[in-house]
Amino acid sequence: MTDRIDGYAAAVFEIARAEGELGRVEREFLAVARSIETSPELRERLVDARLPVERKHAIVHELVGGRASELTVNLVAFIIGQGRASELPVMARRLAQQVAREAGGELAEVRAAIPLDDATIERLTAALSKAVGRQVVVRTILDPTVMGGIVARVGDVVIDGSVQSRLQSLRAAMKN
Image 1 (cartoon, rainbow, N blue to C red):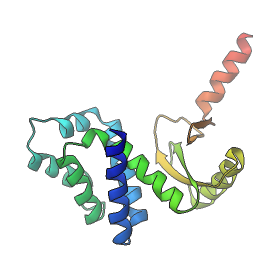
Image 2: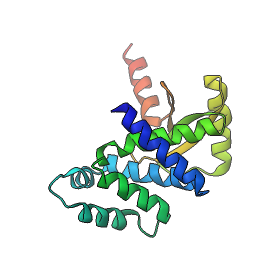
Image 3: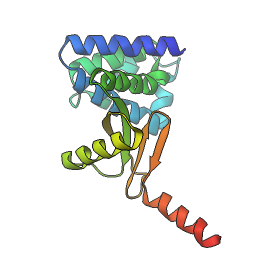
Image 4: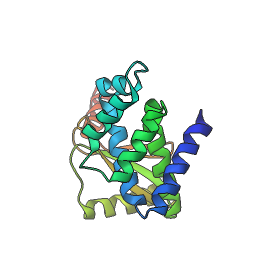
């Protein structure tokens, strides 16, 4: 299964690069993946084998049509039409990893409850690069479950700077 997912991600990467829309397609794929991950109803509908492919395509167009490039919409619709909707979130992460490698770094997924400005992303990039000892490319994900602060993942390294994590640490320290 990993080879298949990597193959799809590599194909999307090459098509998007050839069309000169690699950065945009990557961001939009991550947004679609996040929608699929956070909405059980959407995920169920897109993976339902009883639902005709045409209806699934209509759902994709309702979800991202007008907000994403035509290329992204067509690529997402193709993947879902192939019965790979459940694998799309992993494909999106693999695509983002390929884009980061292409830029000479490693993917750093940063989850925050609010959008981060460019200056904050630059500071995060520098701090995370220093913390993991290699260059990173930061991709932010809006995640309302992160209550204050951020949670960053670079490969297998997770840096939890959320308020919730700090409160849990404080509670543990007070118990001791």
